[in-house]
Amino acid sequence: MQFFVLAALIAVAAANSDYSGSTYPTSSYNRPSYSPSTYQVKEYAPQPHAFKWAVNDGYGSDYSHTESSDGYVTTGTYHVQLPDGRTQIVNYKADSYGYTADVKYEGEAKYPAYSAPAYSAPAYSAPAYSAPAYSAPAYTARDY
Image (cartoon, rainbow, N blue to C red; front, side, top):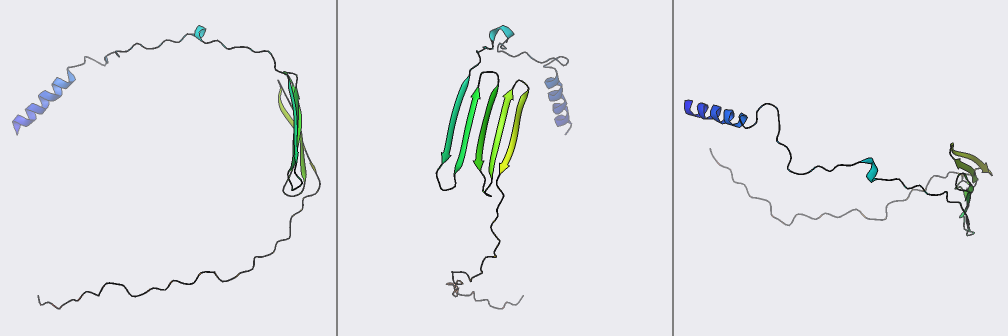
């Protein structure tokens, strides 16, 4: 038993002697170096644009969007038909101060009257279980 304790102490001492103090071995690969001059942000000139589109299919889809920009200030409007029958109209402006939206609603919300669903019996029939296909085990009384 003393031999095993002595062998364990020698193994621990040998393991601790590999590194002196709290230094660690250095890595074998070269670390990448990044400098601010290697990455340059490209500055682009302002990009003015304008577009307009609309959908009205006659089945309830009625919406549109119009937008224009001079490269510095973007203004636009869009409208959408809501499920409750109203029309939501949003006029917006986006510039260096942020995004500002003016939201308006036209029409009056209409909800259908609630009617409780009629209950009916399920369409399926209850499963019919038959007797199991195996025979019951036969137990015999034993004297112990």
